[in-house]
Image (cartoon, rainbow, N blue to C red; front, side, top):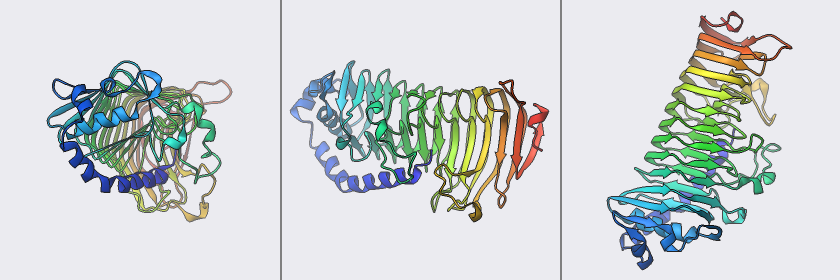
Length: 414
């Protein structure tokens, strides 16, 4: 799913809007808690939103209670906790802006429900900006209630479409952890990580119907040190999408499906995109996803960038479509100029111990650019077989250079 530029514009616009107010908010939070917040605070700086007026009936707007809890927790010293007890708490847009004085943890034992009234959102639902050492944990859910507005999504028809709210956005955050929670039925992307460093996403469940539009599971861009571990994702778009500027990414123990697979890109749609390097995907399973391990770049890429040092290992396919695919002629809205030639370089990509079944005869598709061929492609023990009976397992390879050892002979492109 290629909406990176629109998401970048939204993120920068939100950053500009918040920047002027950051200092004021920090000063206000340091003046001390309100009487209600003081009453809500338990030992160790814990703020229970129900003691600040939040109601867990799923109908009462609890936005102000969460905002008040944030102001007090972000202004407090040491470890601070915002407690969301069991129950369903309806909210509008939530903007949690740092930097904070201490370290803040969201303990999500209940469920947060996003309003279905789009007028309540200028951009995203929950946006956390410039907060370090953030923790979001618990067994509760972030429910975007997207089914009420998915019909308003026009992105399949036009590229410059109106972007619906993403559910959870981390902007300019360092050393963040999201664990245990579920993020479901987002209006747009479930989670977006932008210009962050050292983010761990662990034991998280991301879920939406397979036909829900643009509901990417976890998207990242211009970020480094992102780890996604033991997480289950089933959505209507990419389970994981790794955008331009992503480096040192580790994806381990992820189950994907339904969805469009684990994707790098799309790349090259806009000017000034940065390289994607050092991506590791290991010990994952893709179940009936429409794509498997995918790298996608526009055929008329506007940026000169490189995608390199990519390593896929021990990945099992269960009737995944196009299990291994490098697509340098990606153009979902048919607005590309094939004569322009790609400026994206894809090199040093390893596929090791990729096994299982494919729902398409093409188990391997290396569709590289005429002007910039793929190079350094290594295929080691790739054994993925077409599960149907009306065709044979095959590889389709164009402008790709590399080596193959072990695995099925029919999948050896070199």
